[in-house]
Image (cartoon, rainbow, N blue to C red; front, side):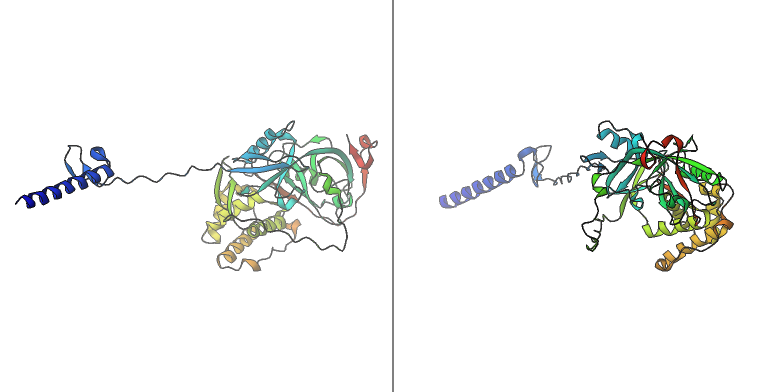
Length: 395
C-alpha cells in the first residue's frame, strides 16, 4: 500500500512538472501559445496567434545622371515628367539651370538622336544631359521648297536638329549646321518655347530663292568626342545589349504624372513614325505612342478611324490612307506578322495638309520630329554679324 502511494505521488509530481514546463514554454498565464490559461485563469488549449509577415519597405526609384561633356555622377529621384527631369538634374550641378539643358540622351554621352530621352524611361537607364555651348549664326539660300532636316523638341521649349538628309540644303551647309544644334532664332525671331511643328512651318513659309538666317547653339562636347579611332582597319566594337528589366518602363503621361508599365516595342513606334513621316512630313514618339494605344483598343478599322477623329489627335486631320496603314500594323502585330511590315510609299506633296491643327497640349512630352527632304544644291554664307568668327562661330 505504501509503495503504491509513493508511485502515485511520483506520477502526480511528474505531471505537475510537465504541466509547469509546458505553461512556461508557451508564455505562462498570459501566453499566446498552444497551452496556457485563458483570460479567466482556466487552463486549457489556447488558439495560436500567427504573426503577420513583415512588409518590405519599398525602395525609392532613382536614376543616375551625368553631364554629357563629363563630370561627376548624380542621383535624381523618380520624376513625373520631362520638366522635372531637367529641374532635378539642374539641382545636382553647380551653376546649372534647367534652361541650360538642350536635351537628354540615355545610356550614351554622345548626341545620338536615336537615344533621346522621350516619353519612356527604363528602370536601368543612365541619363546624360547635353547643355548649351557655342552660339553661332548661319545664312542659307533656300533653293528648294524642302530643307532636308528633321526638327525635334525636348518637351521643355527647345527645338533642335535631329537629322540631316544627304544632298539637302542643310546637309550641304555642314559644319555650319550640325545634328544636335538647338535653333534659337529664325531670321531674328526667337523660337525658344515653340514646338517643332511651329518652327517647321516658319521654315516652309520662306520663299524659294530667299536667304534666311538661323541662330544655332551647339551642345557642349566632351574632349573625347574629337579623338579618332586608332586605325581605320580596327574592328568595330560590338555593341553591348542593354540590361533588360522585363521591359518595365517609367512612362511620362500627359496628365503630368508618371506610371510604371510595359512599354511597346520600339519597332512598333518606329513603324508608326515612318507612316507619320511619309504622309505628313514629321514624326513624333509621343503621337506614335498615343496612336498605337488608340489603334490597339479598336476592334476594326471603322472603330479605329472613329476613335482617332474623336481624340485629341483628330486635330491633325489624318488622311484615311494613313489610318488604314496604322490598322495594317495593328493587324500584323496581332497575327504575328509585324516583321514583314514596311512603311507605305506615297507622294508626300499630295498628302501634306495645308495646316496642322492643334495637338495634345503636353508641355512635358518628349522629343518630336518635323522633316522634309530635298536634293537641290545650296549656298552657305556666314551672317554679317558673325564675320569676325571662324566657321561662323559666335561668342
